[in-house]
Structures are given as structure tokens and as C-alpha cells.
Image 1 (tube, rainbow, N blue to C red):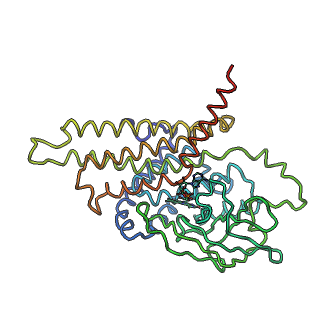
Image 2: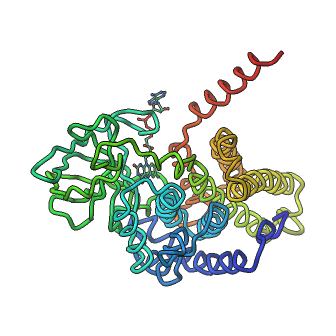
Length: 402
Ligand SMILES: Cc1cc2nc3c(=O)[nH]c(=O)nc-3n(C[C@H](O)[C@H](O)[C@H](O)COP(=O)(O)OP(=O)(O)OC[C@H]3O[C@@H](n4cnc5c(N)ncnc54)[C@H](O)[C@@H]3O)c2cc1C
């Protein structure tokens, strides 16, 4: 690698987390092939994350967490993904859900307290269940077909969610729904053990096979009134004057996605370089690492990774340091995911070319890395939406220019 792993770290706490995540990643790497092959959920990896205190990383200190910002989250996510992309992807959704809530606690206070305490005290996993077959990606603005109807003081929820990462290990799902009498899309906290909640194991995909991104089925799930967290109910019907103060963009937390895929690409580049120095076909005096076209590919992987790391870590750091700049950073943060994904896809392709046909065999890590990065294209933000937003901004600026 061009720069040391801790190049962007600022203090000992960050270096310590990096080292903890590096050790966890080494253990995850030893299990990754089996979970990938079986499509099984890596419960033991999440137990180790829990033991290491990682599942409280973005919980505010006031609730017993580490109070991490976006930078520390992406630093750790990238390091974990080098060992197992699926585990890192799941852990990233958990960190993002909690980090966003810490940055913008718009839910009722009791719900905020419960979610943070559950994570801090027992490492309870949480994730959003918002995608549905009818809406596709909810980032497109489609209305959920999952319906919440009022029954007595509470609610009854019915519907089906797809791509619910970590479904086998989740304690609380944050479920989007169309709720009776509420115009905006609503969010409900749904405990895994509520009656009528079931997981259907549909996730049998090309990549991130151990992420447990199954269907969540809600069959007339009875929920108490306080499970509605968004829009937060106001007893007197008054406007939420506090929202403006607490508000602001939380887009920076989405950077866990490029961080995870970047970690997988880093592992692929390292694997390819190790392969190159060991592979000594008898047509050569030495290893293939001495061949110019192999060196060119290794150099290109490093160049691509250097730019991707720099963009990701610089934006994440600025996000934490400069809240006033967050609104202005929205386009850059969204574009970061697509730029990093371009680099990631290019790097795993080059890594595969370095390794050659041996890299096509099941069980060889490079083959898994190649498959594991592909789902990144279909995690938000979507590329067409990013390009349209960047274009709108540039055109507005051109129109306003003298
Ligand atoms: C590994 C993985 C993990 C995931 N984890 C979760 C999770 O934990 N929770 C969760 O809720 N979701 C999760 N998702 C779902 C994800 O966020 C998307 O909802 C899902 O991938 C579907 O997005 P899509 O673009 O493929 O589908 P669609 O939205 O159905 O799009 C299909 C195609 O049509 C195009 N398209 C659709 N609508 C429009 C439009 N309005 N304008 C322009 N083009 C359009 C898209 O660009 C695409 O080419 C996960 C997905 C993956 C792959």
C-alpha cells in the first residue's frame, strides 16, 4: 500500500480501534470461505464484535457507547471488510442506524434511550427494513406497501421487506410503512420476537452471501403506540420546533458503504500482490512479480486505491470536524460512494487478471472478493441519482453565473 494503514489517524484511540478491527478481520477471514459457500450467517463474528465493544461504537457516550463519528466508523468498517465483507456490511448498517440517530435524535426520547441502551448494554443489533419488491430502492421515494393500521391505542403491521441485512441476528428492525392517518412514510420499531415476525431465507445471491439479507415477513404484528418513531408523534399536534435545531443532514453516515467495499478491494489487491511474488512458472527465471505487465496492474491498483482512500477519509474527517459544511458536502458525499465503487470494481478486476485462471476456483479468496463487491452497485446512493444531482447543481451554478 502507498500509505500506512494509520496514515489518516489522528490519535491513539483511532489507532487502537484500527488495530482491534485488524485482529477481528484476521479471524473473520478464516471463516469467510465457509460462510460464503454455505450462505450462512456468521453469528460468531458478531459475537466477537460484541465482545470487542464494536457494536457500541457509534452509541453516544452518555448511553455507555464510544460516541464515534463518521471518520472512526469508516476507518473501522474498511479494516473489518478486509476480513469479511458480509460481516462488515451488516455491522455498517448497524453503526449507521445508531450514528444517524445520535446526530439527529428526532424519535421520541424513550425510543432513543431504549435503542442506545440495548446496543450499549447487550450489543443488540439494529437495522432498517425499508426495501420492498413494489418500491425497489426506497431512495427512489416509492411509498411502502407495508401497512400499519390503528387498533385500539396501538398498531398492527402487515407486509414484507426484502434485502434485510443481518436478518438472522437483528434484535430490532426499523420498518418503514404507510400508516393509517399519517401522510409521510412512517417508521416503526419492531422487535424480532414480536408475534407475527418471521424471516424467510431468500438471500442466495452472487456476493455478500453471508450477509443474511433475507426477507422480513410481518403478519399482523401487534405493536404498542410507542413503536411509531417517525414521524415522532406530538401529543398536542404542535409542529416539532426542536427538529430544526436537532436536524441537519445525516448523509455522512452512509459512507460506511464505500468504506466496506473499499476494504474488500484492498484485500483483493493484497492477495494479488502476494500471489504475484509466489507464482514462479517455469517459463520465467523468477516470479511473475518481475514481469512488467503484472507490475503495471499492481501499480494501477495502488493508484486507484490511493485516490479512493483519500477521498473517503478526507470527506469523513471534514464531516465530523465541520458541521457547518455538511449541507454543502451532500453532493460530494453521494459522489464519493460511486467514485469509490468505480475504483473498487476496477481493482478487483485487475487483481483477477494478475492471479489468472487460478483465481476462478471456488474457495480462492480472489474469487469471493470479485463477487462480494458487485452488490455495492445496488446499495444507495444509486449512480444515476448521484449524477442527476451533480448535474442539477452544476447547471444551477452556471445559470447563476454572471
Ligand atoms: C447486499 C445488499 C444489502 C442490502 N441491505 C439492505 C438492508 O439492510 N435494508 C434494506 O431496506 N435494503 C437493503 N438493500 C436493498 C437496497 O438498498 C436496494 O433497495 C436494493 O438493492 C434494490 O435496489 P435496485 O436499484 O436494484 O432496485 P430497483 O429500485 O427495483 O431498481 C431496478 C432498476 O430500475 C432502475 N430504477 C428503479 N426505479 C427507478 C426510478 N424511479 N428512476 C430511475 N431508475 C429507476 C434502477 O436504477 C435499476 O436499474 C440491500 C441490497 C443489497 C444488494
